[in-house]
Image 1: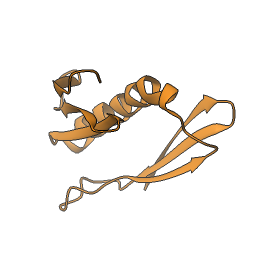
Image 2: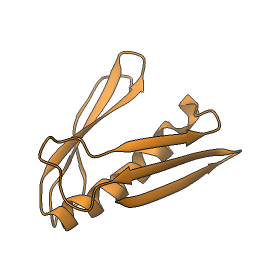
Image 3: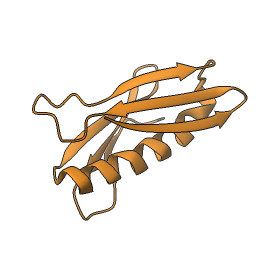
Image 4: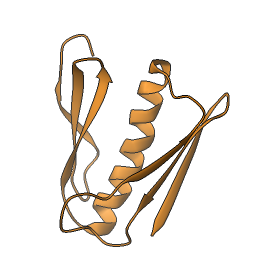
Length: 95
């Protein structure tokens, strides 16, 4: 298992565990939050997760998508491809 941790300040911390190799079922995140995440963290959370996802795509040599809920009923879809920067492929208006 790999562990990634981000301190967003004010006691809000996210710890993420992933397997060492790309899972065959597409599920690879186990999250543990400390503190209360709030909507003001959305951009910082997406930036952090994009860095983690980029590292995993490169290391696992697989491409995958991550859909982020940015607000009630709003989402962004990001693509992660080995050797390429993260790319937002869709965004709901107002996200």
